[in-house]
Image (cartoon, rainbow, N blue to C red; front, top):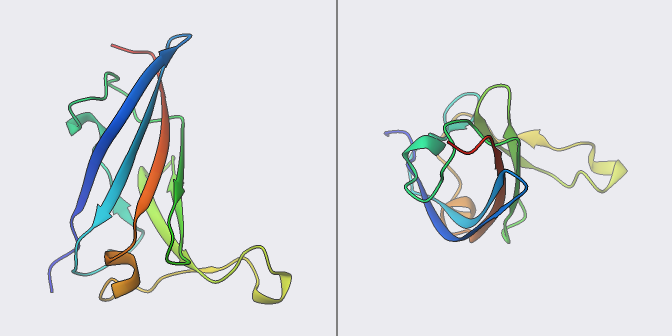
Length: 118
């Protein structure tokens, strides 16, 4: 199966102190979860006015998965397991295989902060 495709929808943006704050949703299509996570090309999103990757991104989904922005790698990693429960440990990255249906159906909101608007 081909790698899952990401779609970013920007709902709103605001500029404060030389930073652009972007509010939106992330949708993940059916396919395979790639090793290391999904690469996001933020520069291809029309409403983002920065030529740099975000300094911070927070994702919130409803399906019980944890979505984490790895700034150094420029990727979104997806974890399963409850990192708020010591008995479950910190959670584990989902395997490189078919992206779970719960992720494909999830409603994933995000807030991203960019600096040095260009």
